[in-house]
Amino acid sequence: MNFYLAIKRSIAYGCGALALSFTVVTHAEPVMNLITLNTPDSAGYANWLKGSAKAIGKSNNAMTMGLCTPMAGAEQMGDHYLFSFLIPKKPRGRIARKTRRCKRKWRS
Image (cartoon, rainbow, N blue to C red):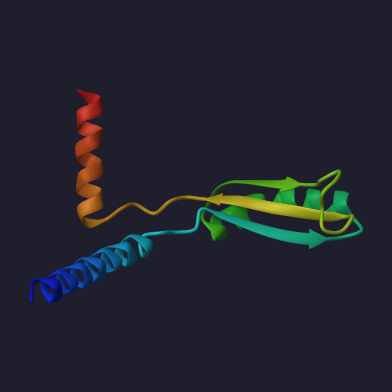
């Protein structure tokens, strides 16, 4: 009888741990966008990007952007990578309260 009770408990604890792990995964959010492009006119594209960076960053919700032209290691020669780091969303609920508490402790 104790053997079955131990099995039930281990299954219940395992399901609880699995459920908790799924709640942690749901709070993940993207922090970076990466766009690969291949163009024969890289200088023209870079100039266009400099002029349009403000509009693209605002529509993308990006805090910083950049254009990478690799000398080696690209999938194809002539590839360019437009990257943008996104502004993280403000935490809500319990996470926000815990974060505020930590900030108060560090300030004092």
